[in-house]
Length: 454
Image (cartoon, rainbow, N blue to C red; front, side, top):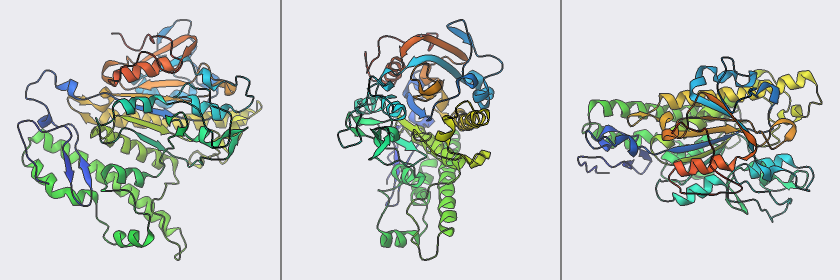
């Protein structure tokens, strides 16, 4: 690619080659000199993080008689990993997704929780092909912003889920395994393979599934960065010292992600019998490594403005994952049906706390990543929550927000909203901050207060 540099470098400049595509982070050269409006050129982004199976409310809730209070000096046990970021989060209580309730359909709270979380809709109870939920807020925003970024949205996860069959008392597995819905009848399943996400962001095409072609390509072991290195060096020669440093840090981060993915694939390939064909994209067995890779990929996608919308399923509803990283070999979902057993309750809390620790790591990543005249943390709206609360209820849902979202969120507080306040009210505020003008979505019924001091 021949770079044609003007006084201002285009924000969406790409380094291209036959081997890959590399977007660039926000550089000083992309902003007009001495422009007071430089910050406004860095857009708001949105990340929706979802964890399954609800929480033990006594270890999550913050008691308060007031609507808004400063976060207490000691957070509840489940939220303890966030104590170092107490000024970077707000805990919201009282929000409800009415569409997750039974409404005469009987059992099936897990399926309804996943399908209704971002749609607000009550899903049709079926495990056949006649799925019906609603368009999710991330896809509503993605459709409105279509063409603004290379990818309208990214849907990520850590756990494979099937899209057919009966998973929850007559509800299709598709309801439990997707929180993103393109249309009321089309779930948007998450991608759980870091390599597939990496190739989508930086590769020249989709992952090759033909084993012969894949084996031929594997011989070269060429890095995406190697394929665009010449253009990168020419670009570095035209920008200032600050931008050269940003480029170096960014390219190091991309190389680090690529190397970690390769190590995962090599390790899991070595574990296979010699006669077996290595899978095209391995999934890390370690939950920490898996989530951190996905958070790193989210960060570079935001950093390069490849997308402004990401949903991340930390695990699927009714997840039977065992968290051996913290010494728990039991099924998570099974533990939540504890019947008051204190040992099982303790394990549930430890699992929730462990997942919160990964969320905390993501906050640190966002705060450490430069974006224009600030950091990604200043630009991103992040929600961390579940469609289930105590005892499979769908009200007073557990929810933490982080990131300043270009001024949408004031942080370091606990807000308790009135009972039956729709979660969709928050979704409307977030979509508006993305530049998608929405007055009403799903069951929203008004403006959500206390998000900022503006």
